[in-house]
Image 1 (cartoon, rainbow, N blue to C red):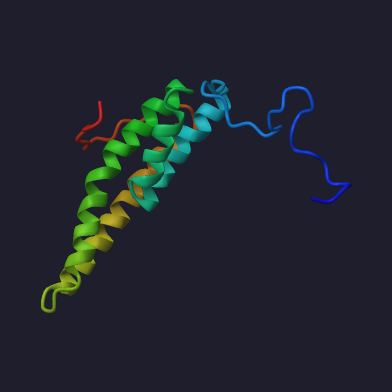
Image 2 (cartoon, rainbow, N blue to C red):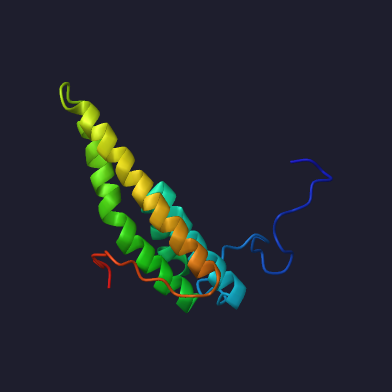
Length: 137
């Protein structure tokens, strides 16, 4: 270790100056709550993963984010599973092109519904998808 390099430990306590995130993070502000709820819906363009991550990370920090990310997750989960299966079935020799069209149609539909919901949520209005299985309560 170099002589002039700063020591990473506090002198008195001997603990590192770098600490992890506290277990109980601060609640989201109203604008942050609306922002993450909006991103949960817009994330539907990429499937169910963005809304799942937002739900798991922010559900205890903002009520609007918890409600909307759960709604987005419930909406995007079944089409994501169907699209993954359709993309696997694309490898079949005779009917592969049909499954490519199905996978594309699923993605276009989910994208349209997700963007529409994201715009509405960005204005502060809650959104309920008309066709939603609501597996996660």
